[in-house]
Image 1 (spheres, rainbow, N blue to C red):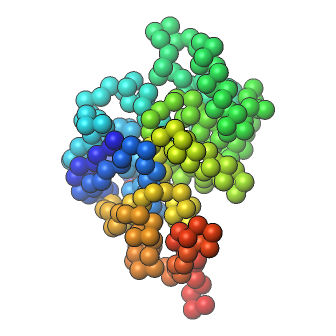
Image 2: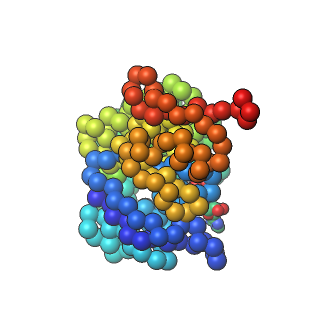
Image 3: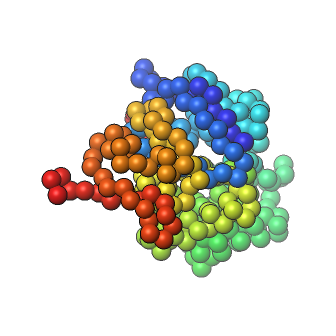
Length: 259
Ligand code: ADP
């Protein structure tokens, strides 16, 4: 569905992504992991064409993304970006309805169907009870759920998630991840998720891309990528890797220095 061919990107003089190539198949759940500053957010921004790479190209269902118009990209790819520090003078419902805007006709009025889709997205993310509240009055975690609802209301084929669980307590982390997994498994939605949480990425993703300094250090199944050697080489701290006793997926534990 997405093919990234030899992509390199720099903001100013320094390259932050260098010669990145990978594919995401339709219906896959792919995780992008790596330390702070390794290029995860930049890579996601390139995948929804907020940024254009100086080298290489990206194909979306065989079409070069730079040839697609923005409205088409917005209908097919939704993004839940990291928290921004803007103040939002909009209500929760208004924010979720923004997810429908790529689908509206020229008059830009929402139909009953748009309202129904937005409500369904709010039910899934458990934000319906505060649909009339202003975005300014929500906690970081609640706001995150509103942005997830907005992405779902977009009815995309691909969702890009940038640190989606960062502000969420474990109950809402699990609700959110179960919801994403259901959309992935039952509706065939393709997911690309950048995450700090290696254990979550291991549990939920089919395949992982481990970045180091703007390049792909390893890509493969969680078993292939999350090894003691790979994680220690990339993150520079000692870890223990065993298996989650319930799922059998690799699981890391942090080790105190000298402990
Ligand atoms: P990650 O998401 O893995 O933490 P980022 O993609 O945010 O990494 O950042 C990769 C590198 O690009 C970092 O060195 C960061 O400082 C730099 N960077 C990110 N955004 C900008 C920007 N807008 N202008 C200049 N440099 C940036």
